[in-house]
Image (tube, rainbow, N blue to C red; front, side):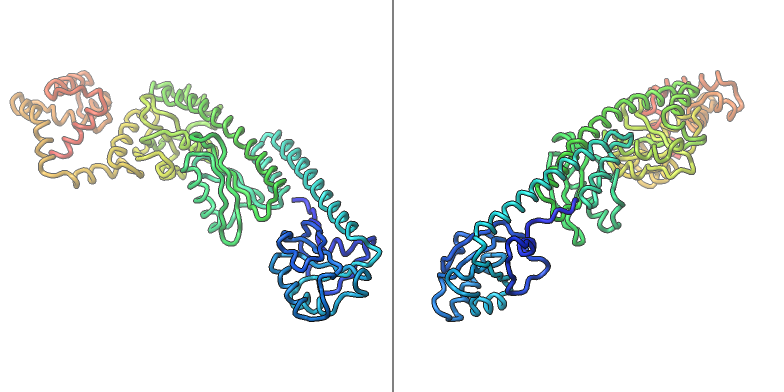
Length: 499
């Protein structure tokens, strides 16, 4: 913030045209002077405000009784008067010794006003100083807003505008997204303890879902927080270290709030457009058009993760999760990808095996339960998604890997569930016993090979048409359409439960 000195007693005393003489000590240039008032009342405090300099000629004092001076100064000090100016040669030849002693005792500055200096000259000088300060503050605010607007024209608009705001205010400023993630911070990130506490304050403000502002006191530092966006569609929070911000500085901050809110609204529209493109990449992968998917991903996001990749699915796809994942995808360019599943059943997350995949972060930020597959090629992505969906169904929240599912399920099944599983598979068991076939074993092998007929045929040493025939007969006996993932998951659970 520009160094604009408010009118102070020290500034008045330093003016040679006023010829004021300090009688008692003045510390650090004196307090700010809001106004200059004159009165010879014995008790003028009902008509005074704080930070006022009181001028008097002393007609209210009778004799030299020290008690009257002490009581008078005590009343002024209690009211918050900044200083007392005593006009000499009007009633008295000099400043009364009792008044000097009382002011020294109370720590209230006292100065002498020569006879040739009218009180109105002092009041006018202070008023001019107040007007000059006000003009300087308005000029600074206009210049600051102009500088911030110019910064916002740069390619990195938000970061540049925030950096300029921090420079103009001479304090820390940070921008959080709708998930409470710190997107930009200037001049530097806060200490961990302060940063964590401030983030919690921002998340609490966002959780209200309405436009709001708040002030937080953290480790001796004061921060002002303001939500961005419309009620019900908050886009983030602007936080500024706000110790001593005046009306003009708050106006500058408000302009950045409006600018950042608009920019984040545009960013949300861009995220939605990217989301549609990402969903198209997922559909292309599932349709077997890997070349198209790779080309689109390479031109927009640096490509897809190398094979074998790890697939994960979320149980929800809120906008705030997509915004967070866009940030992580930018950080892990070419090693992490996400997109909506075709059936609207959450998001598909793909990460390179050696990448620091944000699966746990996605679950914590509104993704609900997240299931993770084994490493997969894109040719068997559909089967990997099914694995991830099985793992996701294991828990209502958090991250679950497919390798954790069988043992966890079996340990939680009671005898009643095992009985139900054997009943479901009974038609296959009876058919195999009656006809000497191996439908049950073939079905298990087929499910173990992610419902791929050629791989199952090689594993069983039979023709793929034989496998198709056996699976078709198993479907008839079970009364289930095994082209459905839900049906395959149910039968697989029965197989591992009944064994």
